[in-house]
Amino acid sequence: MKSFLQYITEALTASDIAIAKKNMARIAKQVMAKQAKRGGFINRGIAWNTDTGKGGLHAWWHASKKPVVFSWSPENYHITQVFKNPAAFGLTREVLIDMLFDELIKNLLPGADEQRVKAKVMSDYLRYERGEMDYNKPIEKFLMSKGWVKVSKTYSKSTSYRNIGLLGNLSDVKKCVREIIQWDIPEFSISAMDPEGRLLTTMGGLKTERDKEAFAL
Image (tube, rainbow, N blue to C red; front, top):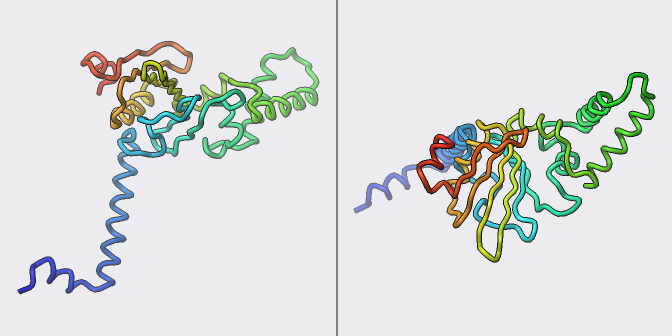
């Protein structure tokens, strides 16, 4: 006598199975999109419980976009990633050039030679792209206003202790923390700052109620 499962399996046509698989894939995609919108809860590119060599794990994180992950080193900074791959941040080379131009103009006296300013902008762009300049506050603040969080994860081999530094708007930092706590990370702390560099809070691995309350977890 056939089991119910065997009977159903044999009764399904190849077309039925294909439709079922398509529907399952569609539902899974919808669920992942909702999870990402709520602040993660899935692995979207950052393995928070691993360490990536001497430079540690560094990234630009976003709740609904693919994170930009890299290993820090001299000439490979957070801002370097933006100039090397502006499309990953929803930007273009032209937009970055305009932002550099506007920033430079603000600091110059009226009547400055526009051609010399443009030459300086192009020179700076290449320096950022090559990693010769390690920081640009206006551009990084602009990214944070669009939901990006600057991540710096360091690891001490001598103590096996990890610190995850997060820099961004509090609402986005909270979403990032919610993703981090889905991972089993031994001995870690989180230091969170706003775009101006003011400390939001420091937590010892979210182990206490005070830590969790700080981020309404």
